[in-house]
Image (cartoon, rainbow, N blue to C red; front, side, top):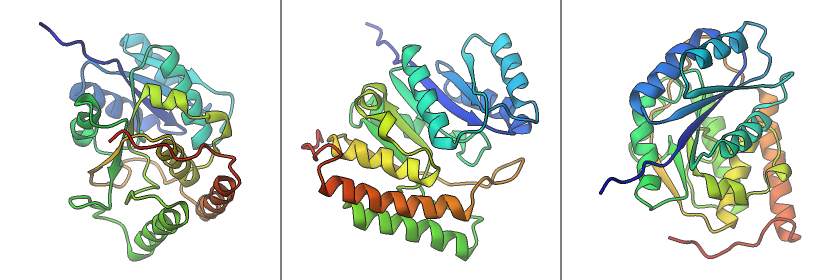
Length: 252
């Protein structure tokens, strides 16, 4: 008897990713042929949106969600998650479109969910086997220090809270109050994992190697880091006041 393959959707937010978009889409579909891709473009001035439309016209398993302007990575993901779910997604993968999240790790990222062992899988740079080969000491300190701060303040056991390479069961995403989630970069990654944990989600980390983007420039800034620190404190305060769901027993 054949086993039905869950409907897997990749959500790729883009802003000025014209040089990366076709190669990353082709690499994803070569690795996970049964998947579909939703490109969420924020009206990129370099023509990324037009290229996304061309890709969608070529392949039935690519779709495009156009947004009027750049509104933040978190809001792009929220809109993408909702659109993918409305299209029947059972598993949603979030990742960057710039090859910083290597596609060779996709089978390992999906395996815990496909095996029924996880509701959320984090591609982790900071578990055994994870690597960041090209970062300097300052960038490592900011990333690891921010993650440790969030882990302590929010009382979370996960090693990599700021990474954006994740696979979700769609029903878990549907249980999270996405309207209440902050729309920043690092802040969005921390908060969605925090809310999943509070809902009793089975969260698994798998090691990945984080690479530098192939084309274009990084969108990271000191403002994004500071926002994340503020959001962590706000989440702890909200949890203490009962404004986020109480921790439910884990399904592990």
